[in-house]
Image (cartoon, rainbow, N blue to C red; front, side, top):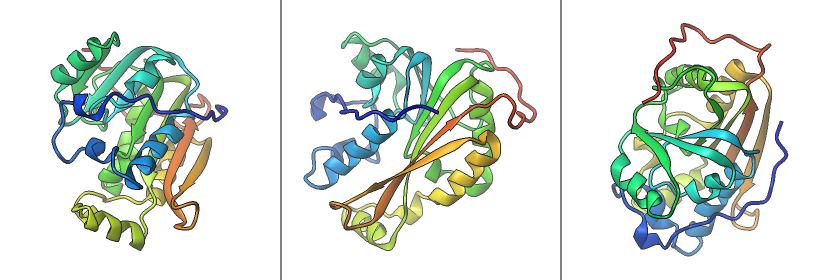
Amino acid sequence: MTVRHKVRLQMLPLAEYIGVNRADPIRLYGWPVVGPLYRARVELCLGELRGGDRVLEVGFGTGVTFSNLSRLYRGIFGLDLTASVDDVAALWGSKGIQTHLTNGNVTQMPYPDEFFDAVLLISILEHLRPAELKAAFLEIRRVLKPGGQLVYGVPVERPLMVMAFRVMGYDIREHHFSTEREVAVAAREVLGERRLTVMRGGLGLLGPIYEVGSFEKTPAFGTVEAAVPRPIR
């Protein structure tokens, strides 16, 4: 497994981020108290990555991770349900970072088998229903090279967090369908080896608020069910 590194998120001025609707949390990154927590969860995920040739971020949104990823990988690929791929790609291209972005779903990805060194998902898997998680992880396993990494982050749902999001005008119940435990169980079933890291909020006084999973595709563990190779776009 990878060794965790301390990472600082390299961000553009918030006004420059484009290509998403108001449901994207990028607007919260500049808020006091909340903003540092949003950045910290991303940094915790990035700290698990060890670099390589190609990385796929599922749910890339504005591409807030792309500056960091460009220092670790030669090719940055992104898959997102709703982001404007042309706008986001143009923004990062103007910064000298070339990307390969497309719209699509993690449960049926348009990439060949064993194509990526790493797949990254930050606050994405909780939006899947429990019955969809295994399909998502099977697809992730399919596109990972042997020994490749899966790194994901999901919120630890607690009553205080639910209330805090309601204060911000965001009803978690309308968007979050799987818990961190359900995500970890499904990932372990498909990928086996794992490390889970918990982030605590409010100087540790609020308890666990975010969980990061770091998994490795072990060739001897599991099989990819009904995987059909798909061409790269």
